[in-house]
Each structure stands twice: as structure tokens, then as C-alpha cells.
Image (cartoon, rainbow, N blue to C red):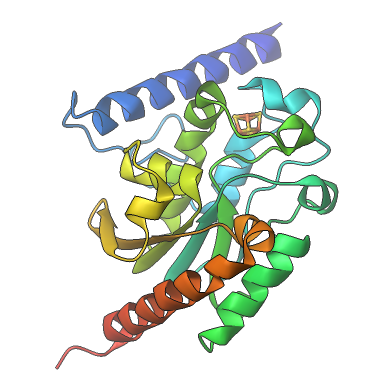
Length: 232
Ligand code: SF4
């Protein structure tokens, strides 16, 4: 009985934190949005492991019903560059790892083309569970999962973010603009430079757009090198 009450309390606390975060994102609150690792303490932001524990066997949106695995994220937890995609597909759902299917292999090539490796960056998605038939994520699903993404970015504290595709760019930049209008220039996410580009899955369907992504990647690498230069 006590265990189930505690579970209920933690669930309510999670929902309340998500609500506070949403209010803060909307500019309605001037609160610090860092999420405490320990519900009793507000002193420390959670690290990636604690965030994964916080997600638990998540049922916060309807996507839990058909998923095999929660796809949290992978790569270097101290990365300066984080790629944020849309959501897991079939292979990712099965493996529990982001970007391992055909689109993932293309992303690996894109990362290597700018002289980096997957071990040097961190890769995650805006939603952690696969939408049925790989449909687009729906607004309520993005909203339910967003606190986890924000907590991940808070824990990673990258110097640079690359948003892959419409949903990642729109979610992070709080805009409804199409990716074609957002790509090709630097934006900012909570003070962190952010470059948006086409999702690798879109590139597989539209190979003629690869040239634009290559232009974006050159800009990303230039900014990456600039941000990593020791200040004189
Ligand atoms: S998509 Fe996110 S909010 Fe929805 S069930 Fe999965 S982890 Fe939870």
C-alpha cells in the first residue's frame, strides 16, 4: 500500500515538473527548470543515468503500448555536439539504440564526413518510443516526452546542437516554420547554437537534397571548431 502510494506520488511529482517546465518554456514562470535528481532535493540536476531511471518503464503517453524498447540516447556523455532526431524506427525500437537503421547509417556517414565519429557526439530523439508504422509524432506525445529531452540536454550541456528534421527543429526552436526555412543558418536553443538540417530518412527519399545537408554540415563543423578553440 505504502509502495503504491509512493509510486502515485512520484508520478504526480513528474507530471508537475513537466507542467512547471512547460510554463517556464512559455515564459510564464521565471523558475530554474533544472530537474532535481532526488525529489527531496533541488540542489543537483540529474545526470544521464538518473534521467534514464526517471523515465523508468514510461507510460506517460500512448506510445508505450507498441514499443519494444525505450530508446534513450547513445554516444559520448561529455560531447560538445548533440544530434537530436525525431523518434525511433523499427530497428531502433528493436535495438534500443537511436539511429541504427538505414537513416542511422547515413547519419554515421554524415558525422564521419565532418571528421568526427559517433563516439565523439551524443545522439538522441525528441520522443523515446517508436510511433506505430513510423508515423509522425503527435503533439501530445512530443509534449509528454519533452521534459526528458530537456533534462538530457541540461545534463549534457553541449556547446552545439544539430536538430535533424522538422519535428526536432520545431520542438527545440518553438516554431511552426518548415525545416526548409530553418536549415542553413544558426539559431539558439537556451543560448546554445543550434543548426537545423534535413533528417537522414528524408535524404534517403530525396537524395538530391544531400548537397544542402553537406552545406549545413560544413557550417556545423566550422562552428564546432570555433567553439572548441581555446579562448586566448
Ligand atoms: S514517448 Fe516518451 S513520454 Fe511517451 S511513453 Fe515513451 S518515454 Fe514515455
